[in-house]
Length: 277
Image (cartoon, helix red, strand yellow):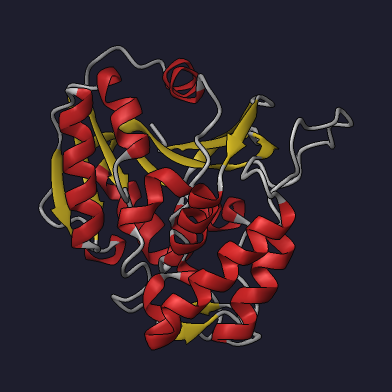
């Protein structure tokens, strides 16, 4: 868990309605990359921990016999159920934290954390997941690649003004990054490799799935992006939520009067570790 921070149920309160629209998609082909890396063949069970609205689970579910999504936020699970129906994917959804595992869920071929592991008690959760995986099973960590090489090609429209949006958020909710009822003085932790080694995982592999395509974004998309985040979730603004949104939209009109922004999709990073056989 982040230093000095304790999880609480308000971490993503109110964000589920904005998540799918606001967040950029993972790189095209990331699910196929995971399937190839793990040698998936339609057998075994998948567990997605911190599944949110089910984006990663629904992409990976066709490669397994059964898929289970776990998240503590009931609104996220409701969004995941709706998304699964739209995509014709059968899955099981459970309201729980990673720290509640194994939660009677059984054994899995793969357990996925997609940009969620840093919110957990990582050493304890990794040790539990190791016991939940079948022999040779895989822990999968999916995230945006944080430092891709710069692309010098110009964009067709202004890039989203993320720095200005961040400054506006801080003016409303405070200078230190918020997360639920707490703050992240030192940000979120990294070095998953050390955590996994301590838990007893082996055979680390890293895969970077290129993206690079340009996506167009509107003010509505960028407002959704802000409200999809833990550090600017709607509840953090209290009775000033409407004021914040009005200022944000004015800022976006100033940056792009025609309401057209553009940005490049980041590569997706997939890291895997196996259980000892």
